[in-house]
Image (cartoon, rainbow, N blue to C red; front, side, top):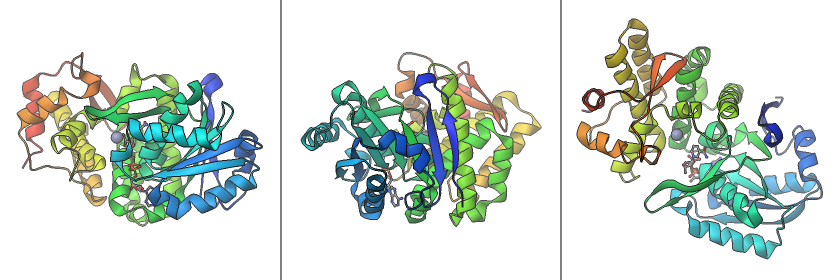
Length: 368
Ligand SMILES: NC(=O)c1ccc[n+]([C@@H]2O[C@H](COP(=O)([O-])OP(=O)(O)OC[C@H]3O[C@@H](n4cnc5c(N)ncnc54)[C@H](O)[C@@H]3O)[C@@H](O)[C@H]2O)c1
Ligand SMILES: [Zn+2]
């Protein structure tokens, strides 16, 4: 199977995304990656799961490209490692391995590795280059593209960070085969989000390919990753620093973040939380605007999530508790609640004028 490439057009910060199957064992990615890496010192940051599965082949791929392999470091997997202590440890390892301002960091892993390693690269010696090699579906369709890097504080998620675009993103869809199903579903919630907010044809493609998706069919996953990266690249190109339209990527997230927070980030994955959150958002849109197109979207979005194994309802907390938690989301600390509401499949608006009572009614409609 061939590889495909697309560009994130950001002037002198533009970069390519390369998508393919068995990218590390084929030479197809070489023409794009090789000029960035030949004779350059590079250091791989990963987590212990990904280290066990893929570090060996990625290391060989890099060495074949002619890099000076300065070393690698794997931290404990999971969100609990995404903090400033890990970043400090990374600085230690990077200094010890001899990274200088011309060296390259390779972030090999899911969103936790990408965000943390990207932040280390953004700040080490005032910023050095890095490459994203995303290995979860979340990272392949979302976190590796767009340049948001950062870590969590005990006070909240992603409170420390920097915008730092990668030099290239190399996606191998084959690695999704080893991903636990719940992690795959997490990514699928974001995938469905792209269809609802930006692209009706893509939404239909998902509806028509459910069983292939769940079997991690490589052709279908290649199409999905390419489409999502291309949609995200467009949004990021129009609003790199997240001051306007990039907010549409938060569809379902204001509700979802509140649920995750109330659950203390255990028992409910991010993907599950935003699937329920998108249900609340679309219900709110129906209550606010009505119309047969929106009613049909509710049904189709619910059906798609359920077929993909994602929840559409929740059985804990009151509408009041969820709404209060929404107001503590970091994006809304000093403003009103900006909610992303669909008008129809493929089109959303950002709404800041909905009254609390209506929002609570929409939340309540999704609670058992
Ligand atoms: N920067 C952004 O724009 C952005 C966007 C979305 C999410 N994020 C961040 O991404 C993080 C979530 O990322 P995630 O869902 O990838 O979680 P993750 O990085 O914790 O990975 C999930 C689990 O899968 C394992 N894993 C990774 N690749 C694997 C593979 N191919 N096979 C088997 N196991 C594998 C990991 O070791 C980990 O245990 C959050 O911290 C979130 O804030 C950032
Ligand atoms: Zn998300």
